[in-house]
Image (cartoon, rainbow, N blue to C red):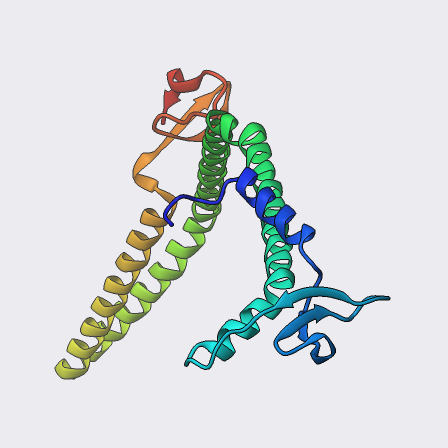
Length: 225
């Protein structure tokens, strides 16, 4: 049988099972050999003589027949429950589609809006970091110049005292400092996007802007400085 069980066919099977004598059917010898009946009710309900022979399948046939009516009703009840669960799940899916799937375009617009806002706040964070960097820059340069001056003086003293090796070592150490400072500056510029920074002065106030993202009152027309 390849056809799916239709609701109508399912109903017909259930009605046939409900109309049959309740089960299980048990052997009732008082009415003769191989006589079977339902004895679980208030009175005896006979089924009839059922002789299954002595073949290999006799016991299986007997057990199947004895319990067929109740088994069919149990399967029908489970099938009805499964159908109800399926229909409920489908109704939920339909509701989701109705409420959300048809609003995909709106959702995408909302996501794009939040992405744009997130990127804007990232730019603002880079701007704030750049301002802090610029405020600290004079002190950093002063500290570096003090290191340069000290090491240069020490190297000169070593040279004057004939300690050429010591002077060379001090010069080498200063080169290491210079290399480290350059790396720090490059890392900071890359972090804050210094390559896109633009300073605009409007009415005596200096603004830190970025290419294509201006915060000064006159926008991209501000005077660069």
